Image (cartoon, rainbow, N blue to C red):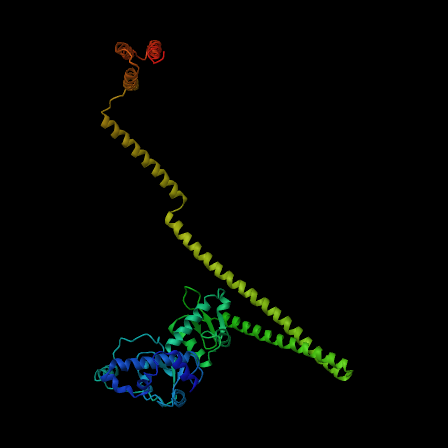
Length: 457
């Protein structure tokens, strides 16, 4: 059993043992007699092949391109059910549903793969009629080697690339050569599975045409800035890409030369230890040449990296200036709407004037309501004092009544003569605010009477 078939059987629930006879049979006739079974088989095969392609298990080891042909049929062959007999119709249905697209059509198309034209051609009309009559047309030959782009896999890869590109904040970081792009994003789908050159071509085409995320001239790739449209590739972009390529190349050369110097040093030491003077001299000469080359490459690399840092800083400054310019334009427009400082002063004067007018009108209205009567404040104060006196007298009467009740209760307990209690109450009633001495005397007399009548006195 091939690795491809083992993967499908292990990772796709539709490929259960009970379903294999139907999936490997020629189920084309089920489109008429059993449409649900036909659709289920088509979906099972399409999903299985999409997943297997993304894991690089199909012939060609592509991750975004499915390759049909004899080799694919051989890898799907089982000892019990032989080869799938309806794989051609699976490809045909996938193409009709825009799940698969031939590689040639994908790379040469000028519009997005998911866009549909509203212009109905006679050929479209004829195909619609044939479908209504359940007549299958132009079935793909599964034995013919042909490449199909798996749009689901391409979409997944594009989303991951775009997410990673969002972390590229500097304009110089968003510029790549095709080789640098391949190196940067080759493990986008799976760390252990790398995109093939064909996959990279498909992915770049999709990002440019369908997603509109990059500009591409066949050699240079430039990602658009967030929330902006793609921009054409300029001479400056080409120079930056060349500079990045040269820096990468020099880094590799420096690493190789450094390793070579270490190896030659070790070889020279061994020659000296073995007293092989000619070999030691030759090795040291080669080491000297390598050191000279290493020094030169390192100096050049340092200069280029300094230039690249300066360009990066300048690019950041350009972005800052653009933001500042846009902000200045916004402030200029807002200040223009305000109309300047003089207009604001005039507006505030008008506002104060109108506020004063409103207050004057309110005063006139208030005078009209009161009828112009002048209120004597002294009379109002006298009325207030009279009300306060009445309230105080009311409180005193309430307190006297409370005292009466207490005395009544005390008289019942001590058998106080009734006429003494009544005399005391009458005295309390005759008291006023102007007779504090008489009140105090009456209270003392009441206390003496109560004490004289207490038991044991």
